[in-house]
Length: 213
Image 1: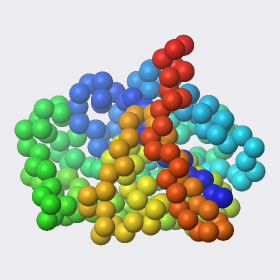
Image 2: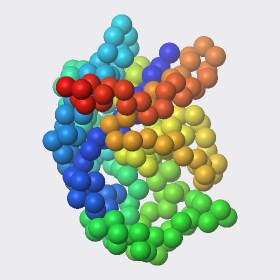
Image 3: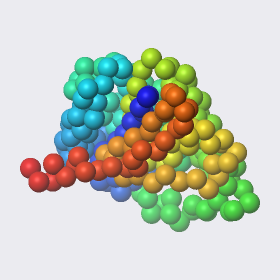
């Protein structure tokens, strides 16, 4: 068995400030840093009894690298960054109030889900983000000597899952695997039957520990 855990970075300052994220390089809030510690402890518990070493690969944006550093310290595991795991780019909207983007954003039509760019200059398409995330995850999938932890963002999370499940980019126009800040998604590869399983989607029970503390 090979496991891959997808971590969605916890609460970050751009959310607290109600501004557009994307490639805007915000950091974790104090609550986000606390939750990153809870995520790390949850991953340590999940890996109890496993012998396969683990690699951590993170988006290179600060809110993810902060998270991966905390996880790496707890698991005593190496962590690297990969810009292909970044959130979708919102172009010139990044760092602006969410209300600014809401006034301009146009949803992708059913007949152009992958290549619709909308009126915001510099924004990525769904195909753009899906292609780069799939490329990164497929490289991780080729490393059968390790389990993997991927630290990424809310929209990018969908394409980590779709890549693992071998859903082609061309078929991912409507796919969504919804998550929330600080959630853990568990993916597994059965090395006998060769099945790829979504074991658990966007679990947040580990964050309840912080709420009760």
